[in-house]
Length: 209
Ligand SMILES: Nc1ncnc2c1ncn2[C@@H]1O[C@H](COP(=O)(O)OP(=O)(O)OP(=O)(O)O)[C@@H](O)[C@H]1O
Ligand SMILES: O=P(O)(O)OC[C@H]1O[C@H](OP(=O)(O)OP(=O)(O)O)[C@H](O)[C@@H]1O
Image (cartoon, rainbow, N blue to C red):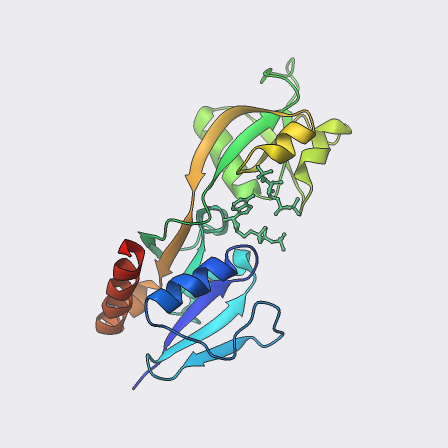
């Protein structure tokens, strides 16, 4: 029998992912979040877990290196991968927002600069709105950029709002809601249909508990 390969995001959603999988009857006995090991097996359920950086999960799934993936919608949107987004797993909830030091969006004829970990999402959002912008890709502490003149505004994730508040920034617009999702490789969805549906049913039941 073939294993289903599941790409799981490292980081702050890993614990909740493992606990949802456990509720669904999927277990990786030698897994712990701090491990340096990258592949784990549930020999009974025939699931192979690959433990990768969140932004890479959509790539593994699109290329077929993994059949399914569990990752935030922020990374799915940023990766622009050709995959099926099948299920909302109801955790990792936060929002994409546009934020700045004031509520002023226009910048007197000059192109707005937006610092973000999510340049593709940012470009797409402003393209839809017909506003030309320049994006500056950062890898963290994005809230700092408008405070020291690196950018006019930021596009980032907000959960509690504490980081924005502590840095004197305000939400100007909410761009999208984010949660952790189950994604599926398009070819695997056809060729491994039975095992993927069985896995999704188990997750659905676990979500109802
Ligand atoms: N403040 C937050 N509150 C809730 N969920 C969040 C928050 N920040 C991020 N997330 C969600 O959790 C996922 C993982 O976040 P985490 O910060 O661990 O990953 P990352 O940004 O890829 O890590 P790194 O900081 O190593 O680049 C995000 O992709 C997003 O879906
Ligand atoms: O609204 P809050 O609850 O304050 O959460 C929002 C913060 O969480 C994330 O940062 P993360 O912790 O991943 O740190 P980073 O700056 O390294 O990206 C995000 O990029 C915000 O900075």
